[in-house]
Length: 165
Image 1 (cartoon, helix red, strand yellow):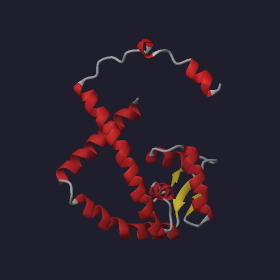
Image 2 (spheres, rainbow, N blue to C red):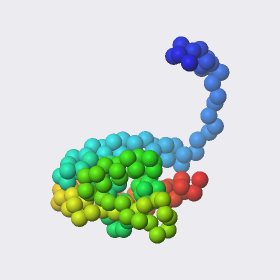
Image 3 (cartoon, rainbow, N blue to C red):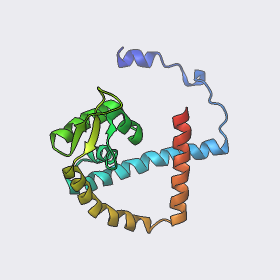
Image 4 (spheres, rainbow, N blue to C red):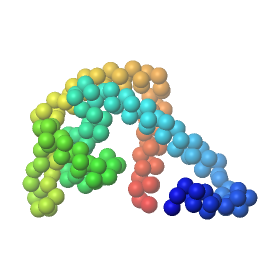
């Protein structure tokens, strides 16, 4: 289908469906979603810069973060980090290739190996932490601590609700 064909199937505006009424809470949540998109973009920019301290990208840091404490399957890392299994697999293979992670046998599943952080991976994460801790501490000084804690609880509640759906 060409762009012209797509344009041809769009009805005139007066024929568009009308959205139902939105509650005050729904409008506030919409504002939160839009602000989250913007915040995510700024955080990903900052994460890219911080990750460079460990010789990583933000995406590599994210995947290694999913296996810092204990090994997990690629699918589990995807669930933990909220990203696709395929995306994690691609990055996991790169991390293994570079010696930052390794695959281990999975006693619970013969074919789905566990991804584990190597000593080199832990060192890379430590290098990031050296830069990240002062950065987050300085940024946190600009926001009330109770507000940060409330924000975290709210985000966790929304994540839980969305993951139940």
